[in-house]
Length: 184
Image 1 (cartoon, rainbow, N blue to C red):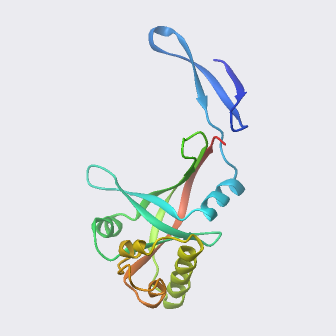
Image 2: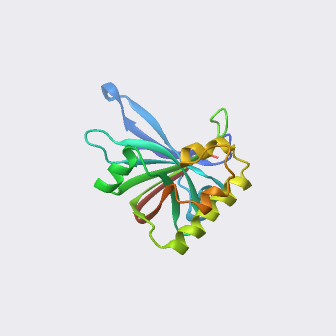
């Protein structure tokens, strides 16, 4: 077994491992480096789009979700219809992924978190989280077309997200595993 490293075009040191390949020939496998907590918190803080993998019957079900991060928890808006709601009720244990990458994929980062979703019920907490979504949409200058994915008409004011409850709010909690990798 050989282990070594080399610098990437993005400036990071990659780990090399020598393993036995087909026919007993040695081959090197590149392992991209882990991110530390500050790095993946920054990735999550700066982002707004995630993917959630739910446990389906035979296959996982993956869907995109807008999210907000309060420094401790991720919150998601979920329309009150669709397969995701059934899967959430059946088994709230999920894997959540957030990523960032350059257009040509020369630099990328991602974090996956395994935990479970809980639906917020407290009226004050829901109102505060909905306001965070309004602020996030405005801060990132997202198209009003995103409102349709949240149960609203695109011609409605973005503030309708905070004043009306057309979607559920899910909170990721009980995170048991985090994998955060980078190449930049």
